[in-house]
Image (cartoon, rainbow, N blue to C red; front, side, top):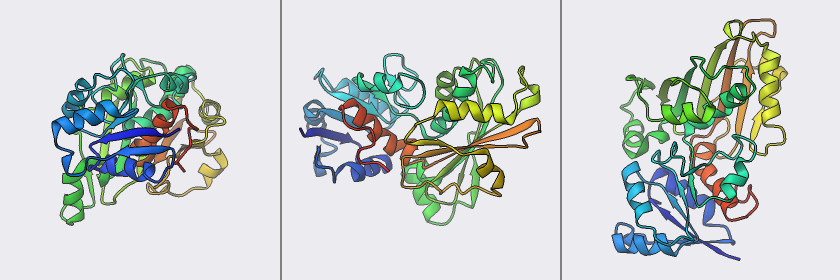
Amino acid sequence: MTHTIFIDGEAGTTGLEIRERLEARGDLELILLGDRRRDVEARREALNAADAVILCLPDEAAKEAVAMIDNPAVRVIDASTAYRVDPAWTYGFAEMAPGQRERIAGATRVSNPGCYPTGFIGLVRPLVSAGIVPAGWPVTVNAVSGYSGGGKAMIAEFEAGGAGAYRAYGLSLKHKHVPEMTLHTGLERPVLFAPAVGAYRQGMLVEVPLQLAALPSSPSVEVVHGALAEAYAGSRFIEVAELEESEAMTGIDPEGLNGTNKMRLHVFGDRGGDQVRLVALLDNLGKGASGAAVQNLNLMLGLREETGLT
């Protein structure tokens, strides 16, 4: 059976990455509008004719596109931030919790996670669920991404060579990812998010430092690692590095998983010490965006989850 797919916003960075992952597959047929992609009626027809629609649009444009869909059989994956904390939409992080894959598979509206939230939720939610980090605990997350995550304007700025080597941003502490990060980890207070962008195209590190001795249960490094390893045991796309591997490392390359839908979680810390650095490595255009969208699409269409992904 061939499924028809329409990518609304296929000319953007995320849309192009999704199209590249889908166009060679024989089980899918892409609805392509070409020069008519800005034609409202052509878009409306495609939005209602497809088995599944992937929206790669700014928030307001995504909401407008959803409002144009009147065919109840159409399944929608939205890659914007418009619906990530909307209870009427299913959050598209398949590994986030037991039963999440099944919820995605049965949904008609799925909100694709953000790249930074994917790393943060992947690190913190299992610790909150296990009671290691209390829901009311003040949590800080530091992260750096390649410039591709900033859209066309940022890509052009960095590739023109005038942007510098590194830029901290989100200095108002009101980054749009904070509600998503807070809600889907089960935390009760907004996380303190310190994002940055580096002078490289793609790849990402998301880091959560924890003072273990300050936590109510005073967990050891091994306990923290064990909770993550248990949460992702058997996962195809999320790997928790062994403590011995992390202990032997002297650095970590943010480009290390580029081109994949994988995420690797590290627990760095002295096993007898009171501090730990949790680090997630992922491709901001892979597991952090386009790869996750394809994974969700596969689940929603009843296909093998890993089809078309590495």
